[in-house]
Every structure is written in C-alpha cells, then in structure tokens.
Length: 90
Image (cartoon, rainbow, N blue to C red; front, side):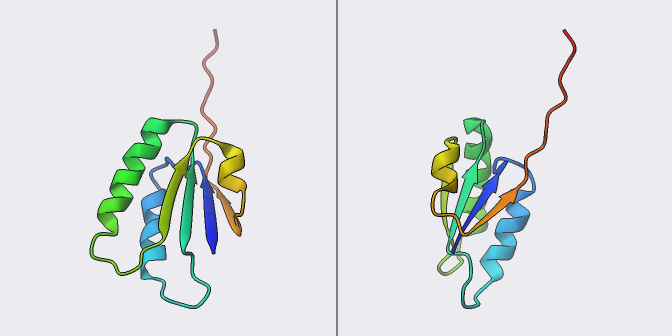
C-alpha cells in the first residue's frame, strides 16, 4: 500500500512514520511518499525518518518529492498535513 502525505516536510510526519514502523499486519503501508514545496524541509524530515527506521526489519520505502503529480500517482491513501502559512500585508 502506498501512502502519500501532502505537507510531508512537517514535524508530525515522524509520528506517523513511527506508527507505520510498528505495523506488521497484512495490507500495511509499504511505501511512504512525502510531498512538500520546500526541498529543505523534505531533506530534514527524510534524515529523521532514516534514523528512526534503523534496525527495523522491512521498513516502508520512503520517497520525497516536490512534484504533486508524482506524489499522487499510484497513491492508495492521501493524508493532507498542509498548514496554510499566514500572509503578511504588504
């Protein structure tokens, strides 16, 4: 199963990932796709997730992307974790 998280560079993603790591049931998530507009945030979260999964047998494959179409293609489930930023008045 492929899970896509929109807003995948957010600080809550490691909590979701930790839950996925403990799931050994049939039909579990085997691929996690993180989408965010900020490649730096994706890289930082990707690093955290790589450390979280150390020593875990058969963790979900993690893909990061800034391309929305790529993130959604083939997704079985989509979580929206998008936080709308406040705009400053000019």
